[in-house]
Amino acid sequence: MTTIKASCPTCGEVELTPADVALMVCSHAPLSYYAFCCPTCSEEVRKPADDHVVSLLVSGGVPAQVWELPAEALEHRGGPAITYDDLLVTLALGPSAAWVADYHPCESVTECPDGSLVVRLRARDTAWVRRLVLRLGDAGRVIAPESVAQAVRDDAALALAAYAP
Ligand SMILES: [Zn+2]
Image 1 (cartoon, rainbow, N blue to C red):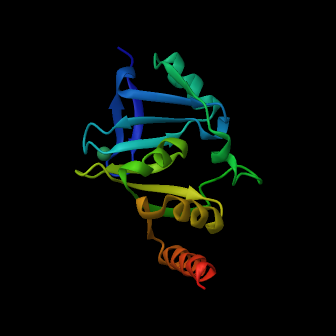
Image 2 (tube, protein in one colour):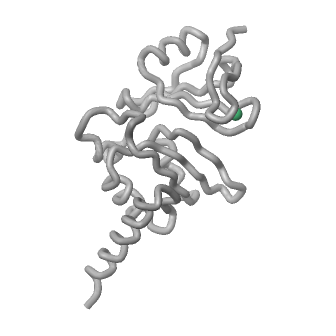
């Protein structure tokens, strides 16, 4: 049986079998990722999968699943690829907003008992996060950083003001 070494943000290096790993290859290559449930802390871990990682996992026996990215999810991508230098944002997502975790590679995804998710993801700019959260309405909320949470509240106040008589 092939052993795959991966790393959990909490536990460090862990050993997995190909059956433990889900490889999600995206039509928009920079959004390809692999995911596994950490055998030590049972958190779901998601990591970006570049071409090299994809070929390593496939040669280790992990089947690649292909997913199509809806065009609207690309709306914020005008510049260079998102990197780890980008802003780390923590969002609380209600069950109806859980698709966000499927469309964007997340640093971590924690499922709460009520079906809502707490996700940490990288964002190039706060404007994109603000648009996303405003669009989610009650289903999405910024937990951190506070500067972005405040910016969303400001945007929401402005949007309400625009409807005022
Ligand atoms: Zn772990």
